[in-house]
Image (tube, rainbow, N blue to C red; front, side, top):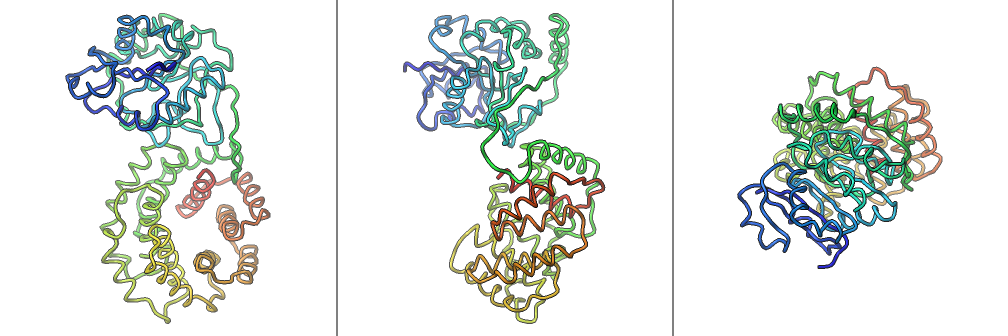
Length: 476
C-alpha cells in the first residue's frame, strides 16, 4: 500500500478498529497493541507491533522506532480504539484536512460520551475553527506533527499536551478545527481522571504556562435550512439542559404527560445535543416506565394514555434510538387496543390511536398496518369539531397519510390555532405541525420567527417535549 494518509492507533482487546476498514481505504492502518491481545489482530494489517503504555507515548515510541513514517505520509490520524467509524469517514477526514488546509483538526463527536463540549457535532456548521483539538481523535499534517511530536513523550498519560499544540505550530485562526461534516462516535463512558492524570495535567500547564481555555474563532456554515438560527438553537439547548438538570423527575402518570414524556424528552435532547448521557438516562427511565403501562391501559388518549406510550416506543424504534422490537414490547397492549376500537370512541381517543398506528406503519409498512390506519381514518372522517388543536392535528396527519382530502380541515385548524389560549411554545409547536402537514413556507417563516422570540422560563414537561421535538426535526 502506498497511501499518503496514515492512521496509527494504540489498541487493546476490545478495539473497534476492524470497523474502520469497512469500505475502500485511502489510508494505511498501523496498530500498536498495548495489552496481550496481539495474536487476535495479526491479520488485520501489515503494520502491527506491541508496545505497552498510554496512547500518546505509545505513538511516540512507534514513530521513533520507524522514523521513515514521518516522511512517508502527508497526514496522520491518531484515534482512540473505542471510536466507531468506517473507512468512508476516515477518508473524508483526510480530504477535509487537504481541502481546508488544516494543520491540526479532529472529526466531531455525535451521540457520544465526551469531555469537551466544543468537540460535539454542530450540524449548523461544516467546521469550526478553534485553538484546541482533543487527543481522543487528533489529525495532523506532517509539518504540524513534527513540531508537536515531542509533547507525546513529555509525560506518561498525555494529559495537558493538547493545550500546547496551537502555540507550537504558531497557529493562525484557520489552522485548527473541529470538522462537523465528519462525525464519529466515542462509545465508552468518560472515566474521571485518576490522580496521575490530574497531576500530570497540572504539571504540564505549569511547566509551559498554558491554560485549558478553548477559543472559538469563525465557522463555515452548513448549507441546510433549519427552523431556527444557530444562536437560537444553541441557547434553547442550554435552556433545555438546564431545565432537565433542575427538574426532579417524578410524575403521577405513566403517559406522555408523565414518565413517558420524560423518556421522550431525554432521547430527543440526546440527539439534538449529541450527548449520549441523556440517551442513557432516557433508556433507564424507559425500562422503569414500561412496568407502569398497565396503569394507563384503559385511557386511549395520546397525552395521558396508552396510545402515547405505544407511539413513543414505535417512534424511538423508527428513529433508531432504541434497539428493542416494538412488536415484542407491545404485543399484549396492542391486542387490548384492537379489541376496544369502535365507532363510540371519542375523537381524542381515535386520534391518539391513529398517531400510534401511523408510527407503526411508518416503522413497518405492511398491508395490515396500513389497513389499521385507514380504519381509524374512516372513523375520524366527518367527526371533528370542537376538539383541541393538538387532537385535530394528529387526526389530520393520519388522514393525510391515508390519502384523504384535508384542505378544508387544515383551514379550520389554522383558525383554531390563532384563537387558542396557550403558551408561546405550544403556539410555535402547533404552527410547526401545521407546516409539516402543508409544507407552506408561510408557516415555516412563522415558526422561525416564533423560535427566535421564545423566552421559555418556567417550562412544563409538555412545553419541554414540544420544544425539543421541533428542534429534533430541525436538525434531522
